[in-house]
Amino acid sequence: MTNQPTIFDKIINKEIPAEIAFENDTVLAFKDINPQAPIHVLFIPKIRISTINDIKDDQAELTGQLFLAARDYAKQIGEDENGYRLVMNCNQNGGQEVYHIHLHFLAGRQMLWPPG
Ligand code: AMP
Image (cartoon, rainbow, N blue to C red; front, side, top):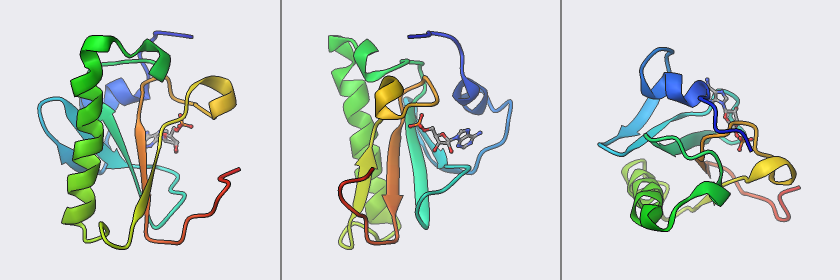
C-alpha cells in the first residue's frame, strides 16, 4: 500500500491541531476526531509505518510502546479496571483509512462483539 505522508504526520509536526492525550519521544496519542466511544484516542508512532504489514522486526519495541502507552493512559484516566478496547486496522478489509499505523483506544461504554 501507499507510503505517503498522511494527516497524522501533520499532527506529529504540529501543523494541524489535535487534542493531545499522551506524548513521549516515540509515541503520540490524540483524541479521535470522530469518536466511536465516550473515550476514543489514537496511539501512533512518531515515525511513519504505513500498515502492520510494514512493521520491521527491529520495530517490535517501538510498536510495543504503543501498548504500554495505552496501558498507562488507561490507568491515568481511571479506566483500567472498567476495561477498554484496543484495535489496529490493516488495509482495506481491516477498515484502515489512515496509512500510518495507529492503535485505537476505546473506553467509556460496553463494547460489543463481533465488532462488525
Ligand atoms: P482507521 O480507519 O483505523 O484508519 O482509523 C482512522 C481514524 O483516524 C478514524 O477513526 C478517524 O476518525 C481518525 N482521524 C482522521 N483524521 C483525524 C484527525 N485530523 N484528528 C484525529 N483523528 C482523525
